[in-house]
Image (cartoon, rainbow, N blue to C red; front, side):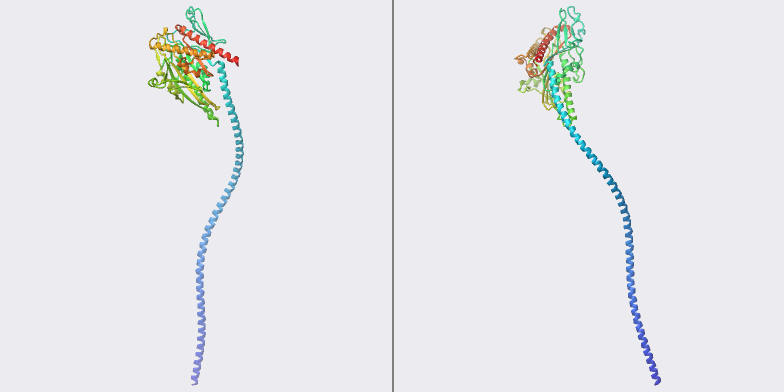
Length: 525
């Protein structure tokens, strides 16, 4: 029992120890469990930290890459900034230079503007001086023409025809026909102004003085040079009338229109060429050329002078034939001309118009040449004993010049170039029938023209303009301050010496009257 007790005690002791140990073990287990739980938590925390660390590492790597990109961009931007700073520096330098240049240019511009104003002032001054000079030139030109005489007489000896003796300047005149038939002074005070005619078989020679005498060797250019001043007067606004006077076959049409050669009668033979192209062109085409050249020169001068008001000049042409005291329009068909009644009207402002007459505005000399060719084709001509192609009518070619000159003054000039029919002695021309009536009308109108010119030269109170259609048509271009030139054409043929003498006597009578008028005008001044 004791052993049992002892055993029980032992067992109980062992139990207690075992319990104690179990308790200790349980405590240790609980501690172990607690440690395990702590370790588990720590492990979980470590795992979480590891995940966070991995995420952080991933973020750090991403950040590192971004940092590298940013560093690369930073480097690029730094380079760009440096380049920009360099450019800015260059731009600042250029801006400074540009500012300096701008200032210089502004200064230059101010100087140029001041110079421009000065030049404009000088230009305006010069323009005013030019306008005044133009006015003075026109006044002086007109004064010179008036000093020469508002009525002047020129004489021209045509070249010998094919069947005429070419030695008229050496022989064929005088009682024994051994003296020059026609002699023109070549030296001395009267050179080119005095001529002498010694009719064949006559004992006496006759002297005549004119404003100008042209020998048979004088070309069309030399003749025109003397009348170009009158064309200028027309451009200045005056009315000018130039007409050719003389017997049939004396070269009047050649002087006015020109041609290529003289035929048997001494008149030009029409070879169908444009009268405006050859060197033999007459006063009409040359006058036209001068007018258009003056117009073009004035326009060019105005274009070259900035601010100058350009002159304007409207040029219109009309061509009339006076046949048997009837007016015919050469610029329309013969049928229309025959059906139209032409009346001459003189207006208070000095203009002259013809009702129903066709007036054509022309732009250049070529257009006028075509009109002249058209008119010549329908002009009345016929064969007589003295001329193969005798003009049976008076032809009046008129250029109206209307506009404004370089001084701003209105211009209303007129240039009348008249190719008269030839004066005739009926006994020599052999005219009969219609030709006889033509000759009578021609001689009557020429006589009326002579009466008008003489009355004007003598300053008669009454001037018989109405005695013929020709003088009535030209009334406003013959009187007043108009300029008139009688161009007397004579033949060098010995058998025409009487007609030549008659023409020269009439011309000398007009010339002596005009010289008397000129001297009276000079004394009056």
